[in-house]
Amino acid sequence: MNSNDEAPTTPPGTAGFNVREFARTAHGSHRGRLDLASLAEEPLDTDSLRLVRALRDMERTTLHRVRDLLVTATHKDARVTAFLTTWMFERYWIADALDAVLDASPAAHGLPSSAGPARRVLAERRERRGPIRRSLIANITGTQIVAEHVTTSLVDEWITQAAYRRLPGVSPAMASIIGPVVEIKQRHIHFLAEEAELRLGRSARARRITRRALRRSAWPLGSVDRSRHERTFFERQVFGDQSGRAEAARIRAMVAALPGIGPGVASTVESRLLP
Amino acid sequence: MAFDIDKYAKNSTAVQWADLDFDEFERDPLSEGTLRTLRYMCDIEYHTVCYMRDLLTTPSHNEPAVGTFMTMWNREEFWHGEALAAVLKRHGVRIDFDELKATRLKLGWQDRLGTVKQTAMSRLVGHDFVAVHMAWGAANEWSATAAYQRLAALESHPVLVPLLKRIAQQETKHVAFYASQARDRLAASKKARKVARFALEKAWGPVGSGVMSESEVTHVMTHLFAGPEGRKLIRDIDAHIAKLPGMDGLRIVEDSMDKRGIAA
Image (tube, rainbow over all chains, first blue to last red; front, side):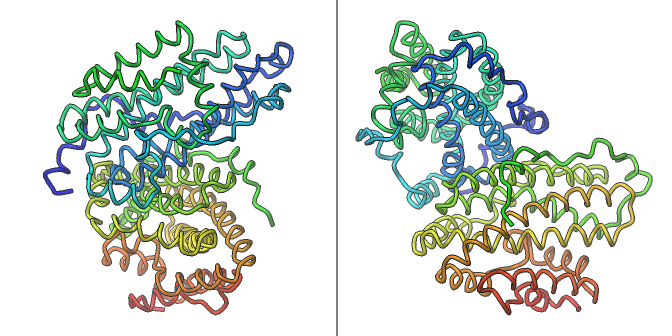
């Protein structure tokens, strides 16, 4: 908010991730490469389909996420907004590819409705704020909020990556569909990880704001607006078995390794992932 | 005429310029005045994301067609910024993201309160506020198209002209979306017509005013629209706006020229 606070938010020009190159090589529609015929021959099981639908819904709420970032000082950072522009575009087409999978799967019609009452958790109440309150509160926080945004987005990408990893093993057709999606998202992770590292490393205030956000977020981001049973399904499907718990532990370790975040916050994040 | 959003999304691309010989700018550089105008246009294109933010605080983005459009439109405009930045770079003018950030930081409290005011307004008039945004967006996109086409007509540069035409062509698609949205939504609600008319009449200004300094706004408007031919284009934009339901008789673009003393 004051000039001292603005100064340390910009990563140096030597940052490794090239946003312009990322924008130039953005991935659009996947429709041409999807092996949907094989999906008809070897249909997906109900739980995998339901996970595809959950991921599709998450990719589709991108605009909502972008709004929550842009009503804060994050919108002033042209490098971050340049990233968000391409990120939105790629997520749009990932959602479209998952839509195609659902359309090609007759069993998708039999899935339980995703609508239902939300889970009310006191710790998550800050996520239910509307744009006015977000904007007012974030304006007090100032430009260090960018650190919170890139870090929570990074953790969110780690979590959805764990979910995507559940799918390729289901069938060769799914492997061919999901493989490139995971690769696309790997670039998002690269940018977010680099930004988080730099911004947290530089400012105690950024670390404080980010720790608070990590402790209070509903994972994956946007979950506060999802039904109780869909959230439970996701936690069970992605983190419920032994390999899922190992994934959650891996995420905890990555969160703990972020500058100034610490093992306590990382354990809170892990505990929120488990069913 | 309905706007085919799926077709638009499928065909949405970054504007291309790799096939244009940018070395031509070294042999035949652009004038100072033109570079100044391009610089303005470039900044505005990059700032589209700030305008999108305002749209996102209305209930509109929950509608799939609007969400799809915003995703593609925001990216196309970003690429217009990149294309113009590439032209400027050949003239020794570097536009980097940090500098754009500085412009946004300078906006200060006015901009910070912007979201709150927008959201509060949009709550007050609810869904009808989307119509206001669409009418506003249509006025902006008509202006942008006219600006690119006019600059292409004023210049004879063999590389700049085709690039401007490519950009203008994408802008006409944006016009089609905003205008069709505005038309339908305004036709459906008397309150929307009233609020949109009030907002355009009281608050509309040339694209970039409020973000760029007034001296730059005046330079660009004079460069592109001074004189009888420019004024005719300005009147055409007003005529398009006036055809939207409830907007008859508005002459906001011409008024904004008169206010800045741009000669007719």
